Image (cartoon, rainbow, N blue to C red; front, side):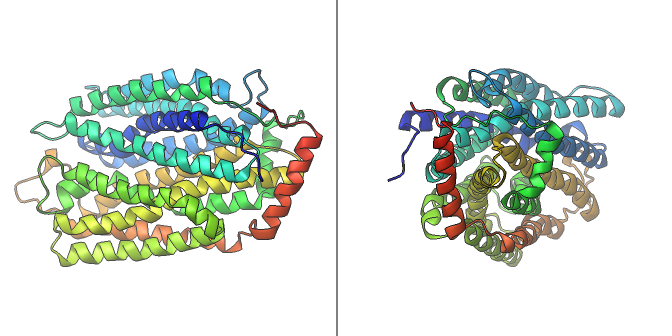
Length: 460
């Protein structure tokens, strides 16, 4: 029988810290784009793509640097936990600053947005990479690690939904105002980052890293030797479309769909897709028992394309009826939830694979690649959406004329078909994924022997 290392209390605290982490991130991922298009840069939507692409690409590259720094860290608290003490408070400060809308000329607003957004991304990276690397140091049991990550991703998803609820509380008769964004950001920053700190105080690292430290450049070069990691990087970047739906919910509820309830239109859409995603995530422990990661990835990506086409056809055939979208949006969320957990599980395996092949254990670099692919996917989405909005003739509400016609077909294509094609493309790299079955079992058995022989497992 395999030994378990993590107590139920420690598991719950890690999940609660993940909830707090995603409260701040959820505010950014769900509302930053509309804050920019409707408030800060309503008079120059084109500039948003430039800001987003520059900031997100640098942020993604910064993840790899941070991952290597984590792998070189040796302290009395371990290699991951020190960063979970240092970063949450600065993250909270910049989460608030980002949603301040200064009354400046365009050049001043661009400079302000670039500074606050890039600083937020760098600070978030300092905590995000070690946070998701932490489970690989908490247990030597791969199944326990996968279950911990699955549980944490479920709770993490709840954190992402909370900003949507809070935004509804601050919504006025004029919709989402400058104050709506700012007050919501303050609430998410203060509460979320306070919970985030719990991971430092109550979680324990149990697997010691090898004493040898790699140079930063050499550590990054290790990526090309890690076939599972290469596969999941391609998968994660290609499935960028899953971010589009959440980023697009305001546009969908306000501009695309007809007959939406006034007060809860976006909240209801968010709840439906979040519920589908939640079911996808809670199904993962059962799926892990029946299928390997390769089978799950290919199945989820293929099913996602089918669901997105169904969503497109149903909304178009109903004349853009708001209530028609709900069941199909629920279905769309299921494979998104599967991917939200699956990529983390594959990254965990890639850390074991690297140690098995090279003797080097690189949790920091491995989970930096996880945050790298998340941010690259978000970079593609946030850079692409403003360009697509311009192509279809979208105009911010403040600048619409009396004769303006909303380009609903174009909005529907962005909302439904672009994510579906993206998810289908993401399955391609997984056809060559081979760290499954007997190969994986042999690797884990050999690693267990090596770690015990080198006394690198810390007993409670």
